Length: 391
Image (cartoon, rainbow, N blue to C red; front, side, top):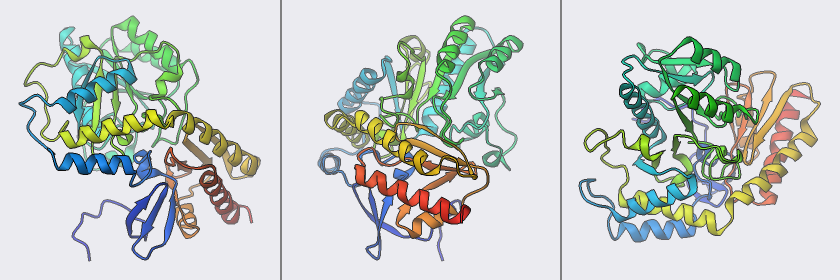
C-alpha cells in the first residue's frame, strides 16, 4: 500500500543509493544506470565534489526570498551567460517552469508588437513539460488526454521540416516565436538536419519572431557541447531553457535570454518562491565547475561515438531495427514495433534503460561513464533485442 499518486509505471526495484554510473537497491543489487535519471545525473550519483558543496551550503544558507540580493544566484547567472552566449538568466526550479517563462516572454514580445492573439510555432512529437501550457505546446496527445481545454496559441508543424515552418509563417502573421527542442528527446531522439536550426533562425529574423530553444534534455554537455545549438557555428537563439543536468539532481533550471528579450519582464511581472535559492545555485555552479575541470563535453562526445558504433556494429541489418541515431550520449534505437518489455529484460540483466514513443530505446548514460560501462550497456541492449525479437 502506498499513499502516493499512481502517476508512474514504476519498475519493480527499490533504489536507495547511487555511486557513479550505478544505482543500488535495498538488497545491495547494483544496476548500471543508462538513463541517468532521464538525463539529470550527468555527473553520476553521489559525486564527491557536489556532495561536499551541497553539505557545506546547507550549513550556511539554504533559502531566503528573492527580495534580497543573492550572490550565488548572480554568480550562476554569470556562469550561464558565459556558457550560452546569452545575456540574462531567470533561475527557476524545473524545466517546466523555464518553459513557462519562455512562453510568457513570447506573449510580452507579441503585445509589444500590438498582437493580441499571438501564436507560437511548435513541432509534432515535441515535449515541453507537464504544466497546462507545457502540454499544450507539446506534440503528444497522450499527455494531453483529459486536460482540455488546452491553452490556445500554438501552430504545429513536423519537426525538422523547414518548408512546413515557412508555410506556417506565411499563413499566420501572428506567429511571434518558434519553440523547438534542438534535439527531440521524448519524441524518440530525433536529430534534425544540419540546416534546420539555422533556417529557423533566418525565418525568425525575417518575421521579427523569437527563436526559443528547449535544451532541457540536450543541454549541459549531453551532446558534447554545453548546448546542442552550439554544434552550429554562429547560431544564437533569443531564448534558451535549461534544467535537468544543471543541478545533477538538485531541482534548478533557467530561462536564458538576450538582453532585449529579458528586458520585457519588469519587477513583479514574473517570480518564483524557491527558484534561485542559494543551495540550488551552489549545486549548479559546482556542476558547471566540475564539467569544465573534467572536460565532460569531450568525454560525452567520445563515449557517444563508442556507444553508437558498437550498437550499429551488432544491430544494423536486423529486421526489427529501423534506425540507430543520436548525438553525444543522447542515443535512440528505433524498432519497428512497440518494445516496452525491453525495460524489464535489461533490468534483469542489471541495466536500467528507457523506452520512449513506444518503440525507441532511449539511452542517456551519465557523462562520466567509463568505456567498460559503455560496452556493458551496449552488450545488454544488443542481447535483449536479439533474444526477444531475433531468436
